[in-house]
Length: 348
Image 1 (cartoon, rainbow, N blue to C red):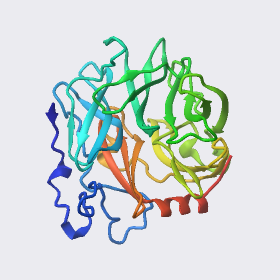
Image 2 (cartoon, rainbow, N blue to C red):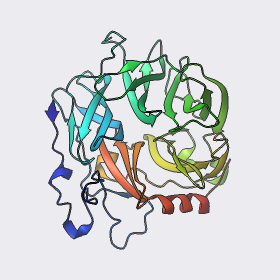
Image 3 (cartoon, helix red, strand yellow):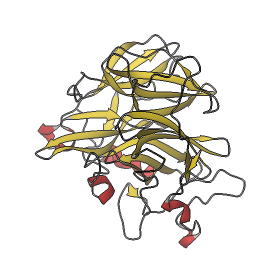
Image 4 (cartoon, helix red, strand yellow):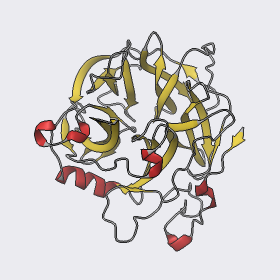
């Protein structure tokens, strides 16, 4: 294993009582930093970003769009990496505090599936459900589609059947069954740069057979002035269950004369019928502004992939890929984010 010591690891957790991974004695450390003084932002950046830089391990030149989940006394993650061929693979990572990460130098191999050096894998999510962890990612199998694997320990991974035919991206599994079935968000596309751009929901009794595909949200919004999500949208982290609905943080893309710009938005979906959108932010909540978001292998990208929630305080930590190069953090209070989404909503 290769140890990555990010700038975050050198931060004093007790500084002004506002930063680091402070937690009650005996509890899992929680990565958190309070909102800057004088700021009214609903989502704010970690001031020591990025937590994982552009060349973290050996021949890897980028690590981003990465899934993180509580595991044991700390955290485990599945990270998107690219080597000097720019070919994407998935690597496991470990952290005691969610800030300082150790990344396995070799990509994930499956116990029931031979390693294929030509099969790409990118943009993973990890969902804890039914006593195990289900990894979802965009895998190359005659074109990009939603691939699945299960693990209990992040050491041994069993490859499952792909959820859909090509072409599809941004598979995100809900953290519990709804009315007895599993639900998965995705974005059907083609083999190009995803011009379809709308979010759908699919249902399964067993994580193998998927059907009852329903439209959830469309791209667009130009008629209400929402250029920030006019080109395509895609589900981000695993949805969070709240009394007001499933909080779905998503990425939204606009096209400009200088290429795409990826921003972060939020929506609330009905708890029992999650294809029904109750609220949807009519402005972005985070957009590329910081240098590490604006400049990189793919400029102007904020791509949310995972969240950590402190149930006691409502503190929410968001992991996102920045400029297809590095991994960064942002923070919010869950209640404030839900309230803001409801108060600043346009559903179309």
